[in-house]
Image (cartoon, rainbow, N blue to C red):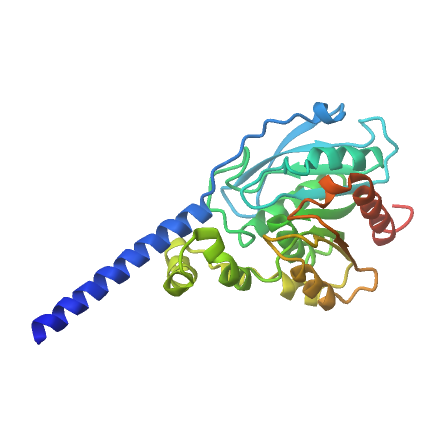
Amino acid sequence: MSTILYTLAGLLLLGLLAASAIAFHVAWKLTHPVRKPVDMTPADFGIKETETVRFPSREPGIELAGWYFSAAQNGCDTRRRTLIFAHGYSQNRQEPHLPALSLAARLIADGYDVLMFDFRNAGESSPSLTTIGLREQHDLLGAIDYAAGKRPDHALGLVGFSMGAATSLMAGCMDERIAAIVADSPFYSLGEYLQESLPQWTGLPRFPFNWLILTLCPLLLGADPRRVKPFQAVQEARKPIFFIHGTQDATVPAKNSERLRALAADERTEIWLVAEAGHVRSYALCPDEYTARISCFLEKAMGEGQ
């Protein structure tokens, strides 16, 4: 009998070790997505003058790469406002499915300076762990520092997409320098989202892999996704937010933005649910209306005469 018990215990231990190894491999892949090349050029979208920039994250040792576009240097009347774009998970500053350069060109023509940059471990920025919003907050704060130092007389706004939208809510809601936030397809809570979506992402059964990935792997990687809570920042914010979400978003369902909107206190906060649009596909579906709605929101949110 004792031999059988030892054998069963050994098999159970081997099974747990094997499951843990699989979970760690999956977590490693999720936190080390393959970089996508920065292969579009601003000139392809009619942007004549581009400044290639590099600046530090708030986290030591991380350098971020990007582009700065001045409305004035591109021959446009300036509003003395700068918009900082924040891209999504496994993407880079181009956000090619929009594409972000197309939206940037329209906003530059409308008088906004635009800063586009790569988060850590993306594009041309420093290698590091991708933490889906946790440490990326330090990167976005570094971008805000850079924009604020470059144009001290400008009002600042954030335009984020998916992970970048969630990061914009967490960093921007708490930073007094940010006057307004546009959040396209954010998630409500990363821990909650992963609990629901990990089986779809990984192809693994919910039990035991959700628990292993969300409990054991943070200890090994030093990054706990359950600390990524956009809803908490929105609850505490006292500034206008424009939520945009496609009703056909199967990756991050629109209920995430609806729940976030319900928590926002500023009366200028808005939500636009875009019929038939998928995840971060609203601009591609209706670029003219998308630009017009953002411009109208920013005009009200960032104030006259900036």
